[in-house]
Length: 84
Image 1: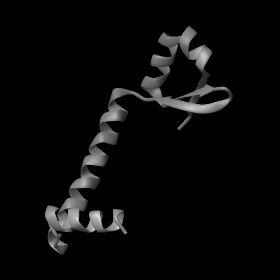
Image 2 (image 1 turned 180 degrees about the vertical axis):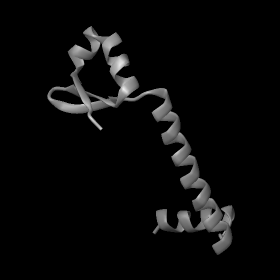
Image 3 (image 1 turned 90 degrees about the vertical axis):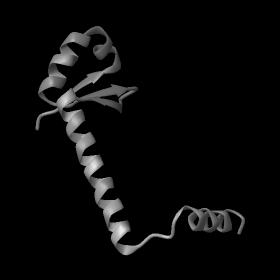
Image 4 (image 1 turned 90 degrees about the horizontal axis):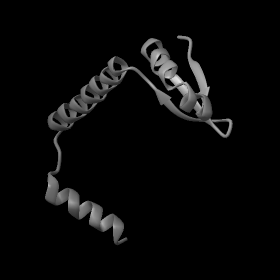
């Protein structure tokens, strides 16, 4: 996938073009010659959200199958670690 890059100044001065490019592929914004942000289409954003949701659902299902200690025991474990 080809990725377009804009400097922060170019992004500011060509915002419409940046949005058009982001519909096609992610656009990297550089600030002070360093990667600073990425602009993506709403479709890509929703796809990432769905992937994250699926990941956390699978983690929750795995924890449920393997057993989990519950919130009170979790708080005690964390408290013991913090106060160690």
